[in-house]
Length: 112
Length: 113
Image 1 (cartoon, rainbow over the protein chains, first blue to last red):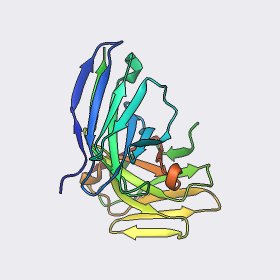
Image 2: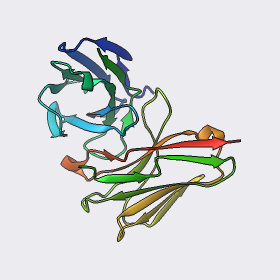
Image 3: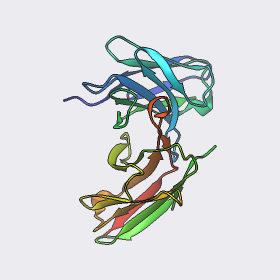
Image 4: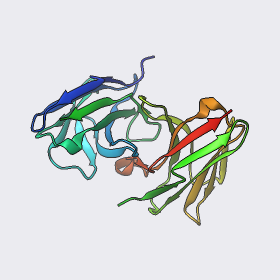
């Protein structure tokens, strides 16, 4: 049973560029949440998608946007990248907007 | 606004010893309190979780103690092993549209031989 799959695993982008990160949830899960984890910090909630709609959003600017597809997979888009966007981006899936989140291994984004 | 405070930032324990990590929360709407273990290059993995209707939950060598009135909870790792060396995060969440996880800042645990 595959867990949460994220791609790519590593990414280097230049300041000002745009990036798209992808997530496939664990089998049986229909809700996807995205978190940003800066080095040495705890993950910070970005937003959550359920039934193809953004249901909750953390304190992140509109440069961060997302999408959920009918097969429950999700994308995280970040526009106008800043150096401070360098972090590990984690995707977590669950069944419904409930507990029991399963995290992927993340995408390490470096902005230069 | 940090709603979950975690301490200590780092911890060194001898093999066989007890590791204790503490967390405190502010939001009384939280009703789910998980602990996650994270190894370098990996995502957080759920270790154990508790709801506020119980004061303690034990799974193997891992125990959560929960004090609702003090708004505090802690993780105890009994018989700590070198393989337990990792970063541990406490977290808290509400339900439904408030089900996002709010994480603590993490504790880096090192278990020495």
